Length: 269
View 1 (cartoon, rainbow, N blue to C red):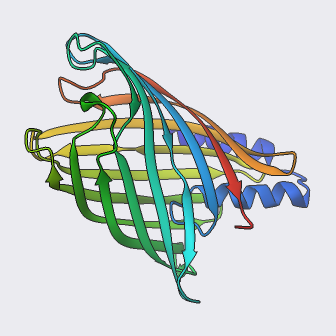
View 2 (cartoon, rainbow, N blue to C red; view 1 turned 30 degrees about the horizontal axis):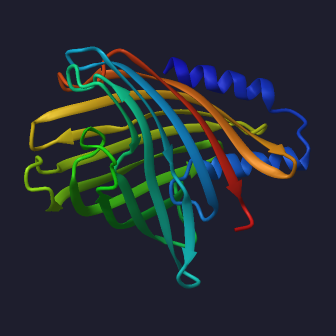
């Protein structure tokens, strides 16, 4: 609740007398809080986590996350969302040394109505579709070694400056290295965002995973602030944030982590 109060007070300070260009940026910043918005964006999301496992390992990775809307008809869009991690890690599985390279790719496709649905509590957007985990990792310790499939879905409400909702998926392994453990995992991402008229966005979310094969939760709580700006005519959003690991497996991270992200936005795409 305190984070919401801080966001609101900052919003009031920044809300007066804005030019049309700034208001346009605010609208675009709000759309970036929507995982199935009908605009092209290319985020580069950097993350760091420490105190991983018995050897207190470290991991730093950049998620390359292009979002591309494809118009199927006047009423329906297909939103392609890709997550490709590039990772560096050290001693994440005991004294396992250092690895650097690609992790596994997660590819989602959301079939979503082209226009939001008006409800008494705001404009609702939703999407459902398939998700695939593709074993692109360049090292065994950077990926699962399995090809996985499952369903994904998202639903959210946007009312005034607020965006809130959730994204979920589930992956089951269907092929891959028979010597590796099976993938059977649920991902849950509830989110709450507040965008000011001057294109600042304050976001609180979790990116939680339940591993059914091992009966383990991983629950990070992320708090982030972002600003959308124009650089030489290019729309760019900068984001900084921190996360706290509320719970994780014994082999997972502990304490605090950090996030830095840069998103290139192409509203005319």
